[in-house]
Image (cartoon, rainbow, N blue to C red; front, top):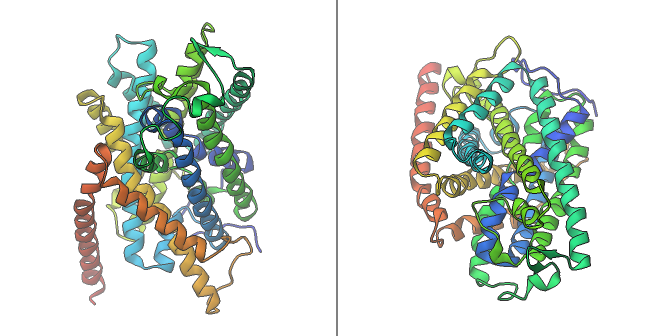
Length: 463
């Protein structure tokens, strides 16, 4: 199969991302603030059983990524799932999935901005958190507006820092667990998984309630698919990057949470500090807690960076079809969709404001609503793959050799799991319930928006 990117005429994107950068963008998407910050609060809520939540969501993420891989091999596109939804489900699906993805990243940006403020506050407690968050946001907007190559390079080094930190943590944690080290007055070991109320100290129900937060933690793995439209030799590079995400999920996410649960009794963790910072600070080694704080700060900046990049491309794909304001589809001389990037940055500024008004709740509310966008994106990818497979069985297209394993059964199972995650949000007592009850309002807004878009098209065509 040819190695050139099949792009829609008029995309005007430069193929500036090479194998090195795409591999790291894939890694960066697989390691985010959902793990570096969110895992602390969830461990405090659910205890060691959080490991099972990460494993279950990791399995779902694996099938989502394989579905994405098959779609990318069919047609690499910066429009990603929006393009696939239009082609295999219908125009309305592209509209809905695109705006749900934007909602995801708008809320994720608020969570990341909050995380940045929390991390910097550790060093500069007298400086208002919103100021440091605003400065960081300004730098990332500038980087994204300058060039995709600069974005790729910055994301490459962000990801290098994150990967090295996780590897150092995993190696150090294994050594501490095997030697039964004393960590701030407690002993590390397997016994911490069961000695403090059992593996399910808060009950199975609470463990299930963490699924929403864990799904958020896995968000951004799909960014590598959006990068396809600006990747050299996409059909050669992308399968390797996607396959790499799979094993990283197992090692970095499940492995890290398992080791965190063994290093310290689960009540020692909290949502106001990264669990990695908690562990290294309690080791009593001078400066190590600050080093880890710098690393998790990098993770938050990386996620914001990816959010601006991906939403800029998705909004342009919507604008090209008249499904978003014309402004968000505008490109600058450097082939960067600056309209979409600036549009998303407005939501990120709102995150700075919310962090000023309700700093204690901003992160949880934002991640809960963002999870709805993640679920919608994942479901779109899986269902698009299922429809593509049906089209190939009818002889309408040639199915790529890189395929979703176990299709269509794994696809239906993944969709069922995603429905379960949303339903469980309605039984929560926290921010998840706010997100669940916002679903009708979101549906109404999307329905009205699609109706307006459809009427505009009919008036333009005279149909």
